[in-house]
Image 1 (cartoon, helix red, strand yellow):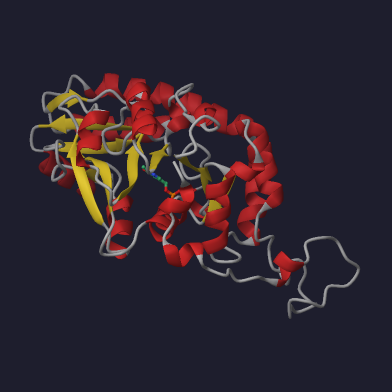
Image 2 (cartoon, rainbow, N blue to C red; image 1 turned 45 degrees about the horizontal axis):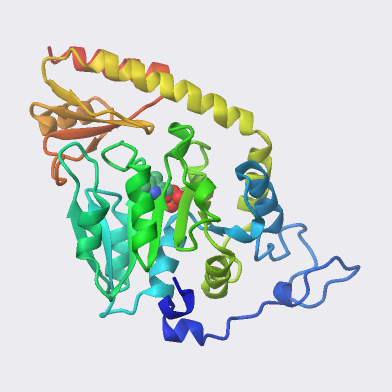
Length: 343
Ligand SMILES: *Cc1c(COP(=O)(O)O)cnc(C)c1O
C-alpha cells in the first residue's frame, strides 16, 4: 500500500493551520503568544493540541507508540477524518458489512461517498471474499466492526487479516466493544499491516461516553495525516484532565467489564425462558440482541413502564429483534420483573 496514492490531492497539498501551541511547545516563564487571557487559570490556556500526556498513558496500557495514536472527539471524529482524507466526494466509495454501526453511512453521506454494503451471513459472520468482490479502484476504505453493533458478535480475525492482505486501501476495524471480548483485539497486528486502522473509545468499557474521547490506532503516517486535518484543539482541557485521571484507575474499568460480562450471561439466562423470546444471539459485547414475538409491542410496553431498549426490528437481518444494553444488576432485575407481567 502506498499511502500517498490513497490520500486526496487537496489534502496532500494542504498547508495546515499552525497554532501558537504548535509553534512553541515547551515550558516558559511568561506566555504572551496566543492572545489568551492571563486570568482564570488553568482554563485560560489552550489545551495541548496533540494531547501528549494522555497519549503517553494510553500507549503504556495498550503496548503501542504514542505516534500510533490519534485522539478524537468520540470515534465519530476519526470516522469522519477517514472520509475527508481519503475519499473524493462524488467519486470514491467504501465497502462495509450490513447490518453494522450507523455512523459509517452517515459520515459517508455527509461526505458524498457511496457505501457498498455486503449482507452478513445468517449467523452474522462475514466473508472477506464477498467484501473484496464489491471493491474496485475507487474503493478507498473497508469498514469492519468487531464485536459488531447491533449483532454483538466478534468477526473472524482470519477473514479480517485476509482483507488486510488483499485490499490495497485502508481496512478500519471498529473495536468499540473489544474490552468485553478479552484477547480479541487486532492491536498486536498494527506493526504488521500499514493499511490497518483500529478504532476504540472511552465511551463503553471505560464508562466515559460523556467526555467524548475516541482513539484511532494506525501507522505514524496515517496519524500524522489525521493531525494535519483535524481541528487544532479538538480535545478540550477538561476531557484531557478527566482521561488522565481515569486511566490511572484502569482497575475500575476492568472490574466493571468483569461484572458486566457476568451480568450479560445472567441476563441471557433469565431471558431465555420467556415464551415470547425466540432467540438470544451470542454476544461478545455489553448488549444482547434478542429476537422476540412482537418485538415492537414489547418495546412499547417497556417504554410505557420507563424502561428503554433499542428497537432494531427494522434493521436488515434483525427483524423482530431488540438490542438490550446490559445494565447494573438491579436494572437488569427491573427489566426481567417487568417482562414477567407479560406472561
Ligand atoms: C458506541 C460505539 C462507538 C462509540 O462512539 P463514540 O463516538 O466514541 O462515543 C463506536 N463504534 C461503535 C460500533 C459503537 O457502537
